Amino acid sequence: MDRRDATTMRSIVRRRGSQMLVGAVVALGLAGAFYALRGRGLRQGTIWRIRAMLDAPRVRAYAHGNFTSLIFLHHSVGRNMIEQGRLRESFTQAGFDFWDHDYNPIGLTRPDGSRAGYAYSIPGDNTDPDGLAAIFSQPEFPLPVNAFSGLLQHEVIIFKSCFPVSNIRHEEQLLALEGRYLVVRDAMAERPDKILILLTPPPLNPAATDREAAARARRLANWLQSDAFLLGHPNMFVFDLFGLLAEANPGAPDHNMLRRAYRDGTDSHPNQFANEAIAPIFVESVLGMIDDYKGGASGQGE
Image (tube, helix red, strand yellow):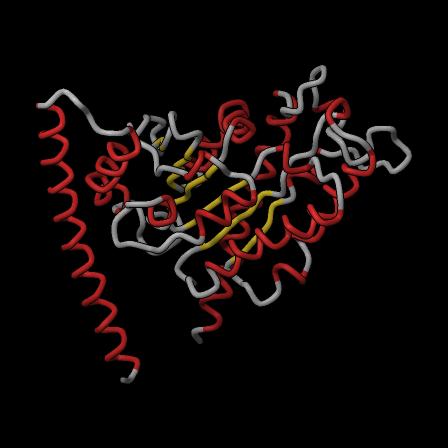
């Protein structure tokens, strides 16, 4: 089978898969009506999947093949960056469609800031590295029946884990974290139509960590930016959120921890000052990564 035949076959498989999933949507809708009539109701995850599949044409309409449809998978630190750092407004002004996905009960938010009314059903609501590895190990379907397929409706997938990941107590834990990030990276190695942008996990407040654990968190952030992780994966980029938030002075008692100006009390969430300072850097970096990839991809085709 030559490349043309293979491409045709993949197209047929996707089309048939779409038809089957449309049928599944109809079947689920009928099941929903049946259960509603019997007063039993559907599980929340099933309702989200039905809504996500029905909304798929609208979501995919934003993807034009030029990497302007962005989704940011996050929890509270990301939410604060969006709201206090005005990420959505900045990306919109730059001509990009910025979607974001918070905890499952909040779910997907559209580029205009309105709630979509459903989630991509992130397994266990877990965006730690083990949760990310689980998401990126899911099978891909033509419609968003799982978290991975939902994220793939967007052209640029931005994601992060939260600060508890930086509590790395021993070397085995550090190696395990690296292995889970490798699962995520390798899952997208054959998807040049997508860009992945990973944020290094933010540092912990000094009240929640110690120098040894914080030093390992710095090593993880550095490894994620190294050739050991990125070389040979041109569609994978890393934004060093840890490096921007953490104290860089080796002589400081809070070295590699959330720096004093960026914390309030014992809370590990970066404060508003941090979000307002870092958000413009983040936006500029993301736009630069997209431009770099587009330029490299066009150069490869010459």
